[in-house]
Length: 320
Image (cartoon, rainbow, N blue to C red):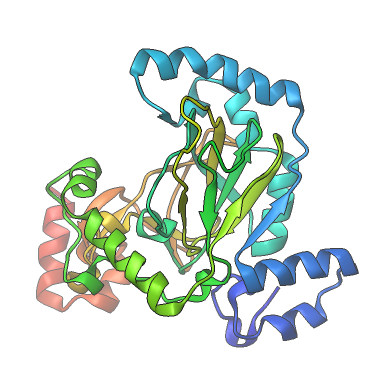
């Protein structure tokens, strides 16, 4: 789907969305599904996953949760086929392709044994892309989720808010500490800000009570979090899958300082194919992963963003 002036934004978040939707060759049910996502930033779907597959993922991971004394396992798709199959469910990929008009790239899985009880946040603070907003999350219930076992909460329509990065709080992305240290040291300031933002905007919270096998798709910037666990000892087995979309640059906002044009390019592996996906900037490959100044961008982009003396210095560094 092509926006006026070839805007590089998901069509569901384009200011020209209704005009584009009216031109799309879609049946009424699909049209309304896409419009709902555009307006609200989420969809509750049937990902068409076999119950046996969900049960296998839970049973395979139970010993890992116990041995690590944790309720959260990242990227279990690398070792467990059931987790990988959930992350690459054909129906989910089909819907994401419709919503974003680009090929989805599943790149991370998170499995939970109990409710996360996370404070409200946007995934855009953890993962982002250029062009912006080509990111989605898919939350799959591996058992029934209800008020007692710490369900997800979310704020419909909040995806339409601006993306607030750390700079809005007078903080800069750090290059010298781990993501874990940053979360411990000042991520809570971001969470405090989001809490005040929700109150200021009078956003309405919804609680996600869904059945085993159902899934929630949410937009990159949708505000969401985890409710308290009121039923002591209850489990809440779920799997979160994060998706980028093709032909973008993928980066980590928590380690990026845009004001100084220092960008932490993310290493992305497509769970579907097992192959690394190279970031691109409007068709130009970015040939590095990790933290860098703009001087490490490809030569064609260097000419656009750096004065001659810095280009010469950058070449000497790159060619060492």
